[in-house]
Image 1 (cartoon, rainbow, N blue to C red):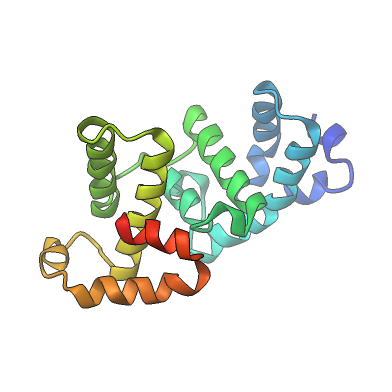
Image 2: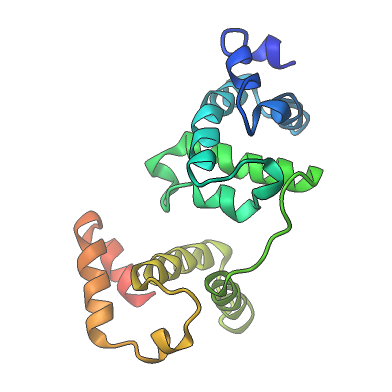
Length: 184
């Protein structure tokens, strides 16, 4: 199937050190889920970049890669690089289902975001789209704070931290978006 869908580049993706041996399986997984041929080819075209990014992080085997490692390769805003975002999301789902990835360990940052997601859903009753926007803002804020699980970082949060974050994200947002980010 790979050769049929990606005739010009199939040898290149098969030769990838990390992802090459699993490319045919990935292609069949996408096809089985009803992906049209163009999105499959675009994902296959992004595989060399994903492979290079994983190896740049020192990963030598797919067994060393977790779903979080793959998702960390995607830009914060999926619109910044839609092909890379789509590829890493698809790879994470495919390889998680097939058991190729290292078992996930939840980071303190992800644990807080998961708790926040539950709070937005169960306590506040927010719609899914609202939860997604709030979580995106919260994730970006935690990254800005360089939060690595130290509860003291959040306890010692000062207005200047929030102002600094808004100054960083403000230039790329419209007035309405900045109001939403501020309320999140």
